[in-house]
Image (cartoon, rainbow, N blue to C red; front, side, top):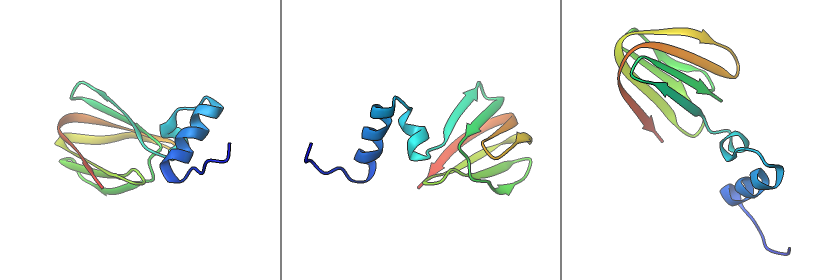
Amino acid sequence: MGEKRTGGALLVWAAELLDLPADVVAGLPRITLTGSRALLMENHRGILSYSDREIEVNGGPVTVRLEGDGLVLRAMNAGELLITGEIFKLEFRH
């Protein structure tokens, strides 16, 4: 009981204790990719850049960059966003 936990280890421990997904506790984005046609992202922190060929999303500790054709931000709220179109490339930048 006297052991110290710091940073990521503390978040993992808390997630296990509370029976919560570690990504939610750590504020990490959760991404669901449906084929190459749709991307659902939870826990985003906003759009950084937007065009029909490239979209960058702030995912907290990581920036998520999509390249494609006909990319459209179909829906967005404080918790999640949906991007559709032909997705060619998905990139994570730390």
